[in-house]
Amino acid sequence: MVQQQYWKELHQLKTHIGFIELLLEKSESIDRALKIALAIASSSSIGAWVIWNHLSWVWAGIIAFSQVVSAVNPFLPYKSRIKAYSSLLHELEELMIQAEFKWHAIAEGKLTAAEINKARFEVRSTKQKSLKKHIQTTIPTNNKLHAKAEETASQYLANFYPS
Image (tube, rainbow, N blue to C red; front, side, top):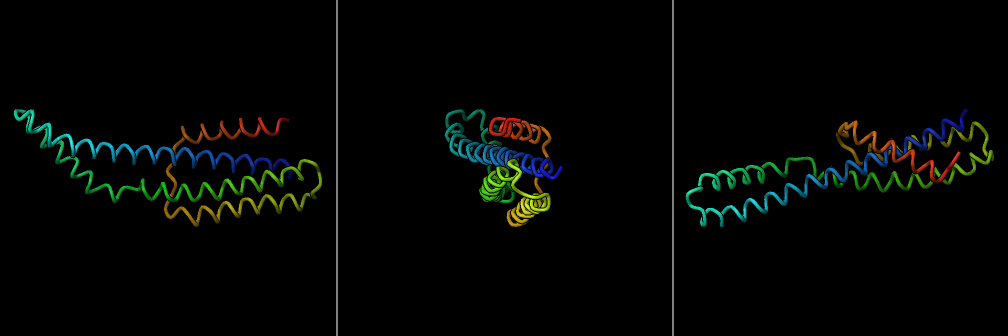
């Protein structure tokens, strides 16, 4: 029974890693898209305004919009999330390596139930410390990304640890 609990903890850790990876990718994509949109809007609008003078109100609107986005951009959470998720991801991946290493001894029956239980709570405790260290607010909920992370974790564990 404690072996199964440790396995579930391992699966959950791998799911969390996948979820953080997906959130990191999403944050990087949004941040990149904002930067590209701002660069294109600010640089092309002025040139287009000169060329198509009769549509100056469109170009003025685009420039105004890009200025508003530029002013708001530092307050958007994506830059800080990228930094936090990257750091958290490194620590969780390191923890996963240690947890998988410990799983070998557990699967071989070399540890007692008390030792397995202690190992499981060490994984959980270390994960919680990493979350507390790197995430100052909350992690956004995204059921679609979580389901994808769950599926990826299941595939990973099935590939490396077939029943």
